[in-house]
Length: 303
Image (cartoon, rainbow, N blue to C red; front, side, top):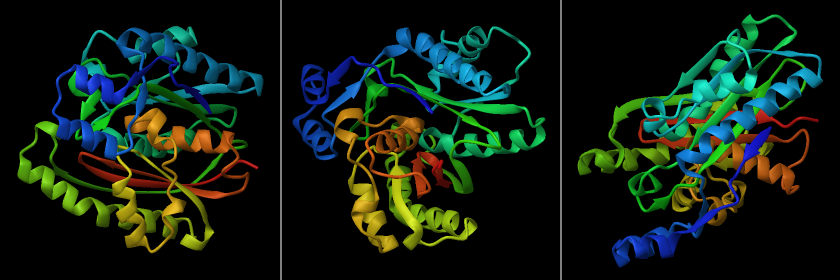
């Protein structure tokens, strides 16, 4: 796995106060656990995506393998239509036009799960000497993209290789999609409330389905790495699943904020680095994307 978290940060409380946000918004964002977020803006995103794609390609070549496909996902729609071209940054890093690149969007925070699933499908169709690269990247360009629903978004890029021989094993994938509150914070208040009312039970459902598809149970799970717009969501999901809250790793939210589609994967990467999980452990990634998609992926960590 390759991760880029910018060293530059924004202090959430100070930024909200300087922008004139209400004291209620400031206190609710603080209650959600957000203290600071990494930031690079659109200006730094090209170089970050370029570097991650380059490092993934090098990793494949060092193992005597080649990239057969790249799948790129993002949450913020501006990245698909603005001046920044993710395909351009990846192509520049790979120095070839011969490797297909697929971009996925439209599921906001849950997009990484379908990206991983598509990557596995593509991998099964490639020759055995080829891998699939997965890249997830987002960077806020406006105040409204940085702060929404009383959460603070951090900028980040995540990349990994899917191959048949090494790396973490994806065991299963489960997803539920129902189109409501598809305009995010701009959606009707009733649609937003409906999405939130169903999120806890829908997350429990996809987590349990992912475990069932992996022929596993909660007793086999070492950790759940969720996306982190807040911590209260996972307090309730843990109760519904009847598992200890500590199983849901949200320790890093104060430093990262909400990393959109990359949240769960980067939290897993940090937990591996910090020794919170071990080789061979079964873990779950979990995301709820406004719009609304709920998804979970089960993985066995590389031994």
